[in-house]
Amino acid sequence: MSGTEQGTVLGVLVATVHVLHPVDRVPLILTVGTEVTDPAVAEQITNPGCWEGGQQPAESSSSRSAKKPSKSAD
Image (cartoon, rainbow, N blue to C red; front, side):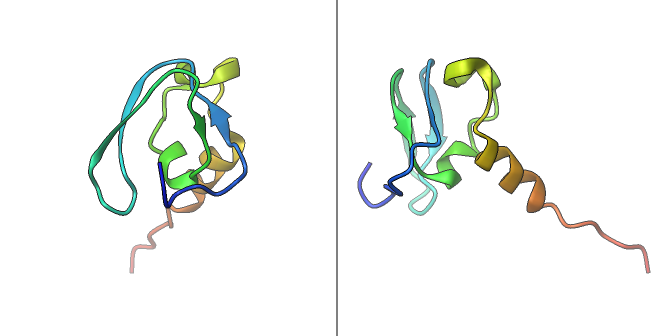
C-alpha cells in the first residue's frame, strides 16, 4: 500500500478485511498477516476479532472516539 506507510505498525490482521483507501476511496482487500500502519485504515476495522490478540489497536480506537464532538442544544 504505497503512500500510506506511517512506519509504526498499529496491529497485525488475523482475518481478511475489506476497507476503503482513506484518500482515493477505492476498495482495498487486506489479507491475514498484513501489518496495518495507517490509522485511517485501522479505524475502519472495527471487529476486534480481525486483529492479532483480539483487540483493536489502542491508537485507532482512541482517535475514533475523539472525533465525535458533542452537540449542545441551543
